[in-house]
Length: 404
Image 1 (cartoon, rainbow, N blue to C red):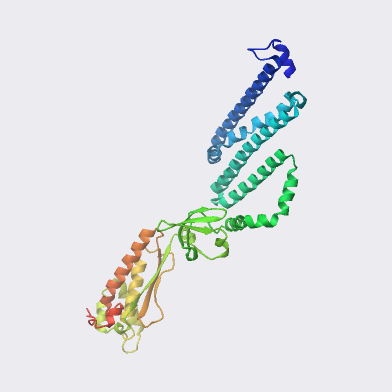
Image 2: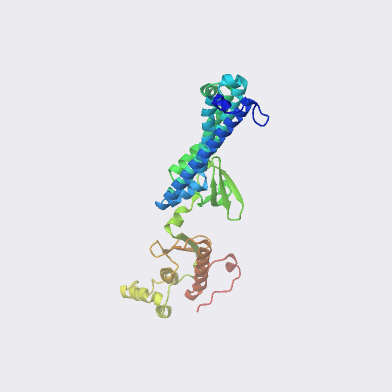
């Protein structure tokens, strides 16, 4: 080809450039222009293909491909491939010399490997986004391991090209130093295995609230890496956890709470046992006027509990417990479809624990408001039943409780 072009050029050359050099320059320019014209044409076809994806209701996939510029990266592979094919054909080794031919070839291979790494890295990121968009699983650990593998393969191929050795011989040499490699990449290997387990078993996702006191973590997962999981604590500090620790150690994941739609309230107050007593007729008459207790008291009296004194087994603590059950049942912020009750726990030296158990909203601030409002009501209502909420100073010279 070079000789054909040289015949078309005057023997004295062009613009002071000798005939053969001018022919080589023209040929190189033609190859470069043709190559990048093909690249532009392929890019245009890819853009048209992307537009068709959007039309065919694959807009999300098309956006991900455009985000990572995959069509451009694919088209960028064309120039080095074309150069590697055409240069040996247009400029034979015997015409330009062995040293120059080898140097040009290695430079072109280096160019190809760089573009190949860029394309494969983008392909891995695109694959991750496509999987995440469909399954909502975060696969950063997989992505990092795949990138590391791709990088090692590309580097081995590049090194083998420059030292004129088979890549398999390089791999054999690396295999001989496997023990050292295992030590160097210990965290990466453990992290990869942990990432596989976390993803396969759906144990952890970005956005999950986890608690892991051993590592000072109590907050939202922001990043799941190959070796490190980042957790943004509620005090805005960042806790870095080894990825494999989330498989080998125990932690609490609050995702199930959010998915269920209800967060549990399980708190108790301590009633002073000296304030618990049976109710007399006057008290029962007063409590019967409360809509919350009217039916319960009437049913108890109708059963004749206690023989001749039907009210003798009704205590102020029992009526207070029923009153709180009515309050929880009729509270609009209680999730009625989930378990809710009021119960007594084992008495302690500090009094009789009365526990409220129910579920409410998962929104944190509103949840705290519900807890506060509920126990404000509980503590304020106790004296209406002649009960005293225990606190340490109440038993040290405290004034006797006045009954209303």
